[in-house]
Length: 629
Image 1 (cartoon, one colour):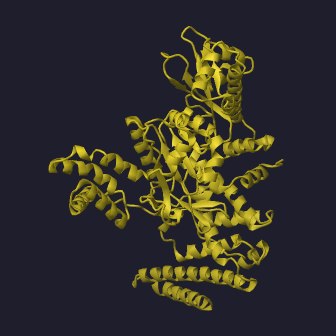
Image 2: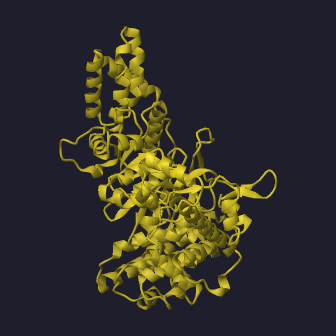
Image 3: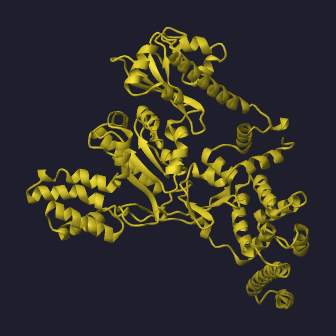
């Protein structure tokens, strides 16, 4: 239990892993001890966003944005510090000091009640089906049985039935929940005649769980033939965002990690049938197209980022495949090459690819649900093992139509469909191989294709973007020396105590107000913290409402790494040399100022001689001081 607000903040920080938190928004790739990705705070084309796990910080070396785990959450979610701490305290089961409790808890209480109401509704629907309490339960069970879904699968996925009557669920839940909670949860809606009615009626109910297993929404399939719409889905709410949630992930995430791959499907029943028949690493979007947030979510579970697209093989399914691949490529752009050549016949380091996109498209033309039920899971797994890369899938689909194009004019137009696909291949050798293959297939000159490729690329050259790198703004030598001096407080396993460092620094002052603020705060904190890690954590907390001061901390921490491992003598020498550098810079600066004044004095000024003598004396004294350093 946290006795104070600061203790609560520290307990929350201890429970947060910065890599896990950042990975929810940014696709990260490990390089050495750090993780790199595209910055979420500006339009980043090359990975300039760095996460340093052992220090618990992030920094973008392009736009300069930096901070710790809490600041990252605040920035990406646009949430105030106090509200975030109260929310996370509730999540981790920590008690908030009475002095910091506020009305903001009402929002959390609403979300809790919505989640509870959704869970109760899921149990209610499931019980009606499994115990055949509803008059249409037999119809629903026959429908599910026809799809190969037996009692075990119904129980695993908590499938239920919504009665045909208008207020069965409402009458059950209104005893424990307000109309506001039930309506915001998407369980009821206002009737045109007044009052409330159930949102889902006469439907097979498919509960949707978030990645933690909590019931947050529903998908509902019509029971009657002419009933519209065929599928009815919950709308977004405080507890459900379809653009950031994937159906089946809760039950699939362990298999995704184990197989180091994930299969993206289109529908709920695709996932249910597949998982039920042993293809457990599959998920689907919830009534919406694949989003960047979906891809980022999946990247946290598969290290190689091998993603299989398994949509319907009809025209709509092929468009969904192309759309999904485009989203995936966009998310991983800048993190490395998308795998563009199948090297399965030779050993290769998978880590060199940013991701791998493959397409599962059995020739029978069935969706995954129908294929698994009619042909079998083993056959599906065979197609999965031999699934082509997306680029091969694209070319195969295009080249399948080659016999329709015979004249030179027709072939010229036909090649224009292929060139944009080939242009995505960055490796020149691999591209050349593909060009030769296409030329041979179409019986045309490979050189002609290469010429058309150059024309296409010239016409589609991206406009140069001017990137202003704030962090490269040069700071003065004096300011840099002052930052170096502050950084000695943050050296891990320092040979000197905080008190010893402060005694050596003495009365050194700082020209920059932000640096002065940082030093003053350090002086206050070193009386109560026990080590560098605690000091860094408290500094971030102290400056949570001072972004300029907080932005300097990652720079100081990075600098401190240079001094790590020094013995007491060398560490002391670093401090002394840095202080000398600061004093020398100040003396040089003052000398330059006096020289400018000296030059500005007019010869006919009656006081000129007197001032010149005074200035000479000052310059002499400053030079004498400088020579000591």
